[in-house]
Image 1 (tube, rainbow, N blue to C red):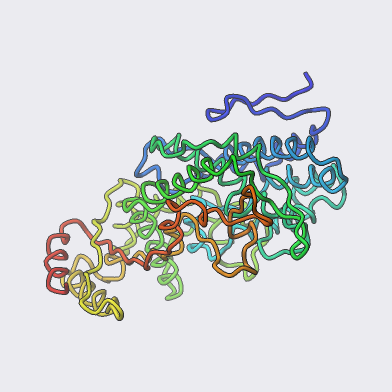
Image 2 (cartoon, rainbow, N blue to C red; image 1 turned 60 degrees about the vertical axis):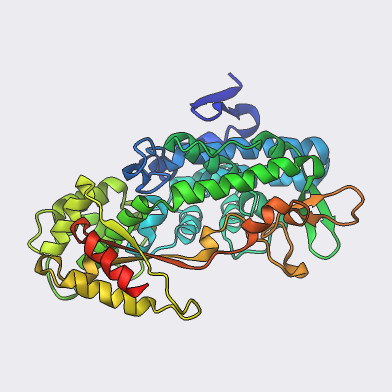
Amino acid sequence: MSTKIIRDPLYNYIGINLNRDGWLLDVLNSPEIQRLRRIHQLGVSFLTYPGADHNRLAHSLGVLHLMTQAMEHLEAIYQDAEVRRAREPLLAAALVHDVGHGPFSHVFESCLGVDHEEWSMRIIGSHGTTLNRALRGCESSLPATVAALVDPKNRDHPAWQKFLLSSQLDIDRLDYLRRDSLFTGAGYGHFDWYRLLNTFEIHDDEASGRDIVWAEKSVLAIEEYIFSRYYMYQNVYLHKTTRGFERMLEAMWRRARRLRDEGRDVGLVPAIRDFWDAGNPEVRQYLAIEEFTVLQQIQNWTAHDDQPLSDLARRFLERKRFAMVESPIFANSLAPDYEGWQAALAELVGSRVEYSPSDMYCLRDELKGKYNQPYFPETQGDQQSVKNVIRVEFEGEARPIEVSKRRPRLKPLTEAPRDQYRYYLPKELQAWAKKLRAEWT
């Protein structure tokens, strides 16, 4: 066979051309990439949506599939060396861009004090990994090139290549919006992804170089895509139940670190103990921490003699969620007293001896406005690159135009909402908390 076929629930078939891209199989089969099978794509969202058990590897294969189509689209239009040279680095980056994710994806970064993109670059660049050797087997300079593409701070590569992988409308988002919609059953991932993938062009800009723009015929598909992002954020990514379990997991980990700093034995499993003890953890120490490692640690904590730690561990494993209480509507909206409100709420929680210390049972969830915004184009003209805007070549215009300037329905989605604060506490205190909230409003 000249094509390696992989069955996928979203695309039915994902194919890798063995004659042209066969080296990708060595990358795919590396232990570092196979580890992504054991990392949930949506963190702890399976506690809200039982079907959200899909993993980072399936998503990475989906991004590879779409990037292959995107490159074939470009190669058919542009017969130049830069596009041809970009194929291998972009396909590799599509497959390995998430290799640095830890347990439960983004959720656990604060627990371990890590940044998944930094670890992705370290894993790709480490000569001790099978992944690095597989990339070098294709071309000796490929690991460095792929790491630069994954690095959000790197500006050494042509903008159009970086932005295909990470921008306001990128290949990564085209896959995960539809995949997450499918597995959660939310149903908001329906947009014309095929048109988006086959109507973009490389635009030569005298000031910024080569950039990516879309043809005018794609404008409705772009609008669908932005609204899909909005609905997925509102209904899936920022779901109150999911966010509550995320804060519970962080509180549990914070408690364990505090106890350990005080000299208490918190029964760490070897992989987590080694990572915490290392001043500058090695790649192998990071890769040893997987979801089953974390779940075993939480299981161990259910028997710990520290009541808050063992209680939160049981609540997490048994899905005994905290109740959510929203912030009051402050009379002075320009200077809301969030700290005072939180102190009053913590005092309420702390009045119950079984919920001490209160910082373990009164958890604040801060929703930054910009993260609750599906599309946030920069307003200044010199910031209007495809990195932070979606640009369309409208007929009769000399330059590409930011899409919301021509699609009024998108305007409300470009305005960042205010930061929001949610508070999570034991359910039996919810009625008291709501009464307190009414007094503060």
